[in-house]
Image (spheres, rainbow, N blue to C red):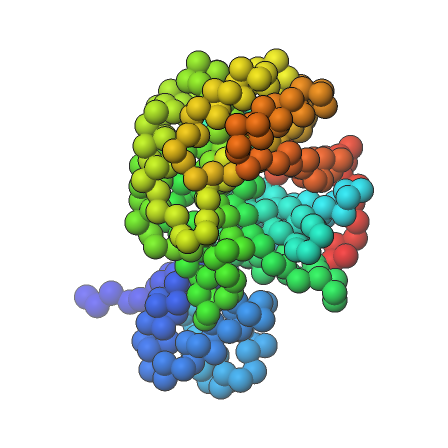
Length: 366
Ligand code: SF4
């Protein structure tokens, strides 16, 4: 007896275009029997123009678009849920993924540039005690397409005089624990056929997942590296960053010393200042000793409180004394007052949650 095909049976899943690399887009186009230049056209629609519908890709023949629509879709999509603007004009953006997962990005205006802080995971499994994302636990990794969609979606929120100039992977999640999707995204962000952004305007922040650092070093991608250090001794770091028990400071220093820096680049050391925990001149001197032999600049980040946080921000005199102690040891050091704190969009405050108390909502699309 011949088996009849079930007309209701689902066909093969469609490819999600924003999750593909440029090479995979090329393969898809060639498999449809199209000329290679169609892949360039498709890439331009996806990454330059941020097309939201295959039907809008008007320089691609109607028949090609129809064939493409049978095998691929403009996905994954993030739905914009809310934006909230802080008094310093920082905008926190809350997105919902297709499965309902919530994530946040932050648009940070500065004097001569506009930075988007990207998330790479929903939640985080590393549990740094000063971080609200870590406090919420881990849900899942974001895909390349979900990372890129934050950029494409944020660009649509910009005013006519605004241009997105910088990207930082410093939002929710640890980039080196989602390394494959993060490096695939970086490749597309920096490719002339992708988002064509210069590597000197990109930065990736990690707490120092050492195997990931070595793999990242091999990637040959162009970006700046920030290490969230948090403490200059294992004794303190073990308490506030559980990752340190797995990858202690001495091993981290070896990995940092081996990390290939491009010409003119230094490692950025992010050091969050927590009252009474890591903010005394003794810790400043220990930090100075730890960084000896590394090419670094130091960003001191006074703690940004969130509801239920177990830490407080040090007073100004303590912050300045810490800064002076490092400066007197000839380090390049600045105090970074995080932006967006009044909408819980500052460093360490992201939670991927709607919160009417926190969010001074503005109409979507503003
Ligand atoms: S600081 Fe980064 S690595 Fe640590 S819990 Fe927060 S998101 Fe995760």
